[in-house]
Image 1: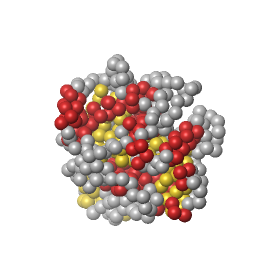
Image 2: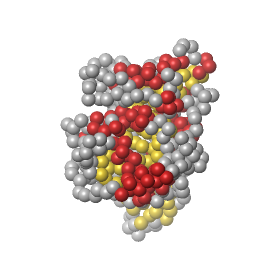
Image 3: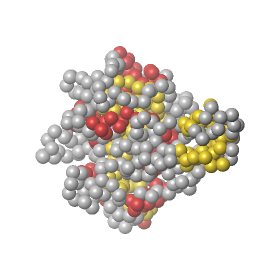
Image 4: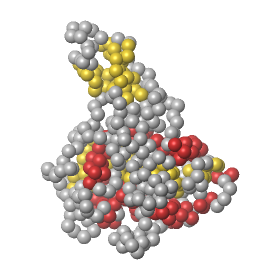
Length: 454
């Protein structure tokens, strides 16, 4: 499919643009969120009582790299079900690690936040046919106007989703296979066959084009793989069925079992981001608006879905249509590490922080995350000597400690941790020079910033 703006698409855009963008004071717990000043942009839509339209209010926040002239894609970071997970979506676009992936590929980073009440039916948004598909496409139109990037309406999507967000992402693959570059489904997949005991969950059809979209099913081992009972024990049977249906027809789908977790996201980003990086590198056109490329067929590796080893496809013993599909050797070797202990290695240091400024005793700077391993902390030096680690201890109850801290649905905590440090031990009147060093989550250090005088 070639994403050119046809007259029909222009008419749709005009109609969608004419619909009102609702702006009003939101209700707890969805009334606290970071401001969306450029390069961030936000739209908010009220709930609709019309059949087929979204029955929950929703925020969409997008980050667009300052350096990009024409976007080549949109990376969507979709939270899961429940009030807590939905609230966590309010910070998804502010994640420095996911921004590093987006920037590398000239993509925007978009995070929806559906305002689902705690006991409401998650299917009313995580099934995109219940209005979230229409609302999502409408937000692209409105955000394209706000940001001055008209190409946002037509570029491809890379989808990441947790739990109900995985259901949503998989559903979008099945509804729009020509638009999706790749999809990572953490602990949630759509149904391809009805389940009598869950009649409210509607099954999808599996179009031929969806078999060409790279998909990764990722779940915790405690979600039915090694622990067969409990609240999330049905996740593995659902993933196993979805994988079997798609892979059995030749679909480009893999499975990565997290050996440490249940439903929480754990350290999945250290495989998800390299996997999406490989898929986007292969599929995104160089020129915005051109069709997606097909995934290369050479270099593919295969693995037993709950095993610990992967091999080149040509040497795989067994039925390849029952094996997890991995796009290349680099991803396959990361997969091998991940399914053993999630300890995906990295030998490259993070980028050096930039634009260090000193005003009085306060230091501020800018930083980009290491694509492979994100950011854990910063080392502050004064007059060439160690002064402090900031923060003293990153917080993440679900995996590696990170600078921004992480919530259950893989998004930064609020308030956002600032790129700012106060040297409370500096004596008044003394002149000093400062440097800042970035440290990633495998303890590799960047080169220091240049000495900056107080």
